Structures are given as structure tokens and as C-alpha cells.
Amino acid sequence: MERARIMATLVQIRQAVKSYGDQMLLDAADATITDNVKVGFIGRNGAGKSTLLRIILGDEELDSGEIIRHPNLRIGYLRQHDPFLAGETALQFLMRDSGEPDWKCGEVAGEFELKGSTLDSPVATLSGGWQTRVKLAALLLKEPNLLVLDEPTNFLDLRTQILLEHFLQNHRSACLIVSHDRAFLAATCEHTLDLTRGKLTLFPGKVDAFLQYEAEKKEHDARANESILAKRRHLEEFIAKNKARAATATLARSKSKQLERLELNEIASEDPSARIRAPRIEPRKGPAVRCRDLVIGYPDREVAQDVQIEIDHGQRAAIVGDNGQGKTTFLRTIVDSLKPLAGDVRWGHGCSIGVYAQHVYTSLPESQTVLDYLHRVAAQGKKDQEILEVAGCLLFRGSHVEKRVSVLSGGERARLCLAGLLLSQHNVLILDEPGNHLDVDTVEALATALLDYKGTVIFTSHDRHFTKSIATCVIEVRNGRVTMYSGQYEAYLDRVNKEIEEGERELAVARGKPIAHGKAAKPAVKAARSEKELRKELKAIEKTIAQLDEQKRTLAARALEPTAAAEALRVHNELATVTQQLSEAEDKWGQLQEELDAV
Image (cartoon, rainbow, N blue to C red; front, side, top):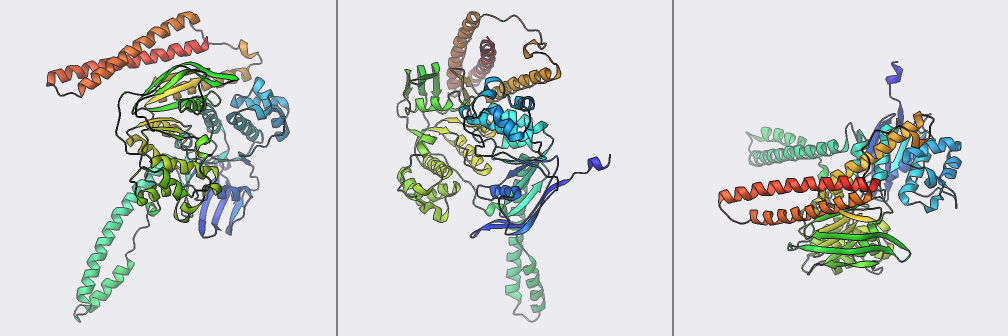
């Protein structure tokens, strides 16, 4: 029993040194990874995280030092490239990759909702998110005792992220996970490994606790340095006054030795830190964009119809939904890079729209340098120092600003496009996955900048921490509909979680009983109402919401007007009542929508 409690060391990193040219990635770094411990691996872009993963996997060598691997180490690595054969179905790949029979592969695939036609479809026809689920099922079939995942949530929709979280929470093996997604790391990892300036720090706590610890340590060290600097000045003044006097020369020499021993604390914040400023624009009022009777899609395929959306100036609207449902199609339609099949999109007077999306950052001017491009797109009057500062925040430092666009990687082009938007004067920003190529610090800095921004933001992001931080409303694209919610991102998260948990319960029941899935016992429910009844009630509640929303706006405007104390109190109380009624009406709308989806 005692031996069962002793944790084995799976990987030990000792005095690891690795450099590329003059860049030191690992500088006598040490760390230990034990079994059954899930570790979130963080650090700035370019710090060397992916390099260390390749070294642990045996794909690269250290310059010096050693990696000690347990004899029974079995690493499961989430591959970023596609390991599939042409025409191969998901089930055929799992059987070929694992050597397990079809029933075993099907059982494990069910952990990720891979079943039926999805399991029997050619992998090439599945979306990126579904292909990632297939790769995860393949990992699980090999029963590794250390999972190594490098940015596993990139391009995954929310549902797949939550499925992956549930899998990792219940998985017993150790994990080493590189991710910039703080919500994902907080949900899956109880330890944090940080790589900063070549040194590894293993912290026995979650990522948020580590970041708070680091911030407090920096603040403490900064205060200590102020005290040391003050003491230095005092000693230097004493020595200068007394070293030439015979009576005090001995004391001055003693003070000189004391001065030599005073050392400043090294503070990590001396590294360049992300200081992102959003465009400074004048706030506007009223609708920024209206979609009326809009139908979006392509000549051969309709994606969504009857889209009735209105986004006001100053709102930060998160576009959510599973991959393949049409989020990017909706964004491309409202910025007019894709023509609607019917209906129209109308932008308010004076809207200046800046777009960050793949079709934009893959078509940057090839012959221009980074600095040339930023000078061209920056708002009039931007100083060189501010342009270089924004470039530096997005990892274009030193000679990198002279690189031509033609030699930039996809991630570098994306960051360059984002830098250009931040230097512009656009009062509307359309951002499609802005955090995908940024580290934790820079994503946090971008969120802070967007909170200060006085314009309108319409964005997609799979990063829940980022979305929760800035979204003021949610627009869901699902099952051919585009629906707007006011400030309901956490409620949306809860709903998706409940749907997944219900599916997992059904799967557990099906596994526990040798009966058909459809015959499993279900809790008693009220008799379902007809679609006609639900649509009628939904229309009525939408009318109520519109009326309450208008009342709320009117009262909010009156609350800002100078008036007598008694009148101000009455308006305040009335506003609170209407706000509560609006919230209840929106919740009711959500319940009706769920019932309608079920029908």
C-alpha cells in the first residue's frame, strides 16, 4: 500500500541547455514530471516551449544537460499534422493506428461523440475539430502514461474543448499541456510549468494562482529594489564624504564592502511586456449594423436564414457556435466579402470597419517590410515610437521589423495584420480568432485594450477566458439560425456543458446495460408542445423583450440627466425593475428556444 502512494518520475530535465544562434532557449534548466500529475506549460511566444516538447519526444537533442526518461514511459503526443490515409474512415484509422478491434475503437471513440455516420465517414470530409477528436481517441487507445499536447485548443470549437476537458479531467495519466487558453489550463491542470529566460519553474498550483504569485513577487522585488537603491545612495554619499578623512577612512572602506554586497533583485518584468493600446476614437450612439431578412451561405448551400440582428455602437458581440455552423460565413457576409443570398446588411453612418480574418492577413502586400506596412496603415499622426511599441508587443522587435511580408509565416502575418488594426482609427473591429497566435500575456493585454476601446467589436474566439472578459452580448450560429443574446456568455457556456454532460450520462447508461440506446430509461418529462405553439409563444416573448429593451434604454438615458433627488431615485428603481423583467424574459426565451430545438 505504501508503494502505491509513491509517485514515479516519468521525465527529469537536468541542467538542460539549448540555443539557436544567439537566442538561449534553455539555460541550465531543471524540472521533473511525475506520474498522475497534469502540468500546464506556459511562457511567451518564442520562449522555447515547443522546442522542449520536441526534446522530450526525442525529435531534437540538447546542447548539454540530460533528459532522463522512466523505462516504462509511454508518451502520447497529439500530432498537429494529419496521420490519415487517403479515403480512410475514422474507424479504419483508429483500428490501423492502434491495432485494436472495431468494438474497442468504437467504444473509445464514443468518449468524443464519434459515432454513427461520423465514425464511418472518410476522415478528409470531417472538420478540423472532428479530426482532432479522432486523433484524441487514437491517443487514448494506446494507453499512454504521459500525454503531451501542444496548443490542443487552437481551432477547436467550444463543444470539442469541453469534451477534451472532461477527457483530461477523468484521464489518470500525467499530462504536459502547452496552451495560451487560461480557462482550459485552469480546468485541466493542477500544476504550472513556466519557461522564462531559459529557466523552468514548476509551481504547485493552477495557472491563475501562478500568475498572481508572479505578480506579487515582482511587486515585492520592486519595493525591495527601491529600498536597496535608497541604501546605495546613502552609502555612496557617506563614502564620498569620509574616504579622504583619516579619522573616518576605515569606516568608509567598511561601508564600501557593504555597498558591494547590495544586489538588486532580478525582476522578470524587465523583459519586454505587452502594452497594447486600442485605436482612440470618438464614441458613437445608435445601431452600428442591422441585418434584416438576411440569408447567408453559398450558391450551392444555404447556411442560415431569417437573420434579424442589430448591434449597437460600443457593443462587443461574441459570435459563437460549433465549427462548421457558419460563424465565419456570417462574419464574411457582414463585411461584404461574401454576398448575402437574400436580405441586406446595413452599416450605420460614419462606420469605419477594420477586419482581422484569414482572408485578409493572407493577402498582405508581399513586397513591403513589416515597418513599411505599419507606417502605411497607421492612423495619421502616429509617432514612430508608438508604431515600434505595438510591433514589439506582437513580437516584431529589432531587425524583425525589416523582414518582408513575403518571408513571414502564417502566424507572423496574422500578428502583423492585428498590429495594423491597433494602429488604425477604425471605430468598428471585426476579429476572427484574434488570440490564436498570441501568448497568455499578449492575449490578456489585447483583452484589456478592447475593454478600453470606445468603438464596436464583433469577434469570434475559442478562448473562453478572453470571451468572458470582453463580450457584452452573444450571437449564436446554430442549426441554420443566427440568434442574439444580451450578456449571456456564461449562460451559453452552462447550456453547452449541460448538453455534453447529458450525452455522457446516456453513453454511461448504454455501456452499463446491454440494451439499445433508445430503450434506456429516461426521466419523466412533460408532454412536448407542438412546434406551432412554441413559435407563437416565442414570437410573443420576443415582442416583450423588444419593448422592455426600449424601456430600459429610455430610463438609462433619463438616469443620466440632472434632476431632483426624489425623481432620480424613482427612475433608478424603475430601471432596476425593468432590467430584472428583461433578464427574466430573456431566460424564458432561452428555455423556449431549447424546447423548439428539441422538437
